[in-house]
Length: 131
Image: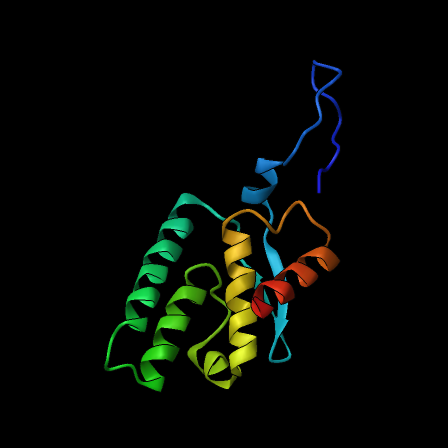
């Protein structure tokens, strides 16, 4: 979806995405009856998310995966961009909610959550989980 903004000096320019919006705006979501905030994505948070994600994918190939190690790594991924969610919150989520939360965070970190409506983001996140 393309978003139209006020034209720049060139009257024929259509802005495809507002990258400033990605850095400036947090994203809020409800989980476990609480409202949580995904922080605006700075280079520091992107770095933390990327490092946690690498550990997550390494965990999949580890033969000693335990439920506790899965909770720990999901917490590390989520807390890299959201400091309002706890390990206990992660433990209480079912598999589907964990997957949806992971997709939402990924969309946010990669800047794909800011130039769509909340309804479009919800649909997109749910569709990502189904594939």
